[in-house]
Image (cartoon, rainbow, N blue to C red; front, top):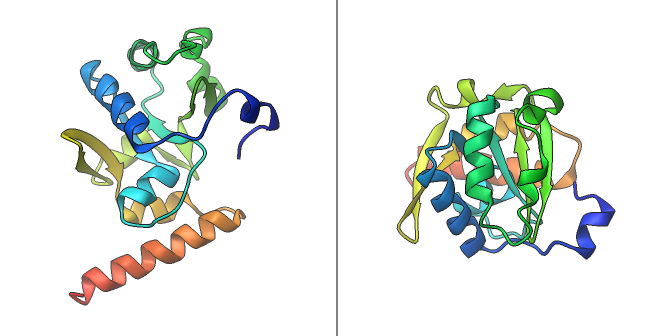
Length: 166
């Protein structure tokens, strides 16, 4: 959920923002997986999103890599976070030109669990993006938010269609 104050300073991210960010993260060899709205979009659901959600390895070394990758954003807001903040707070919001949420866990799922079979790579504009599988996204979207319920419904329909060969 966006904080009210973020809306005046940040804009909704576009696909090219996601691609640029993932390219920079890949260059730094950061350990991350795309979750949230953009992950659902890459699985085929046409919807908007207000931020980019990344489930990350919360180690200080990995957060340093993420901060270096995000230094390309106009305000370099990622530089303001401490290397241990993702570990301490579970979710850290970086409100730069676009909003990027760094999550240590989503509905109890941490990066190490996700990386054990819950990630698939989608090639977008030539950039490999690690994306949570539909099944993992369903687990991560067990919230009270109506948008998550809609996403889960879509993901289940996609799984059923793929299973039946449609």
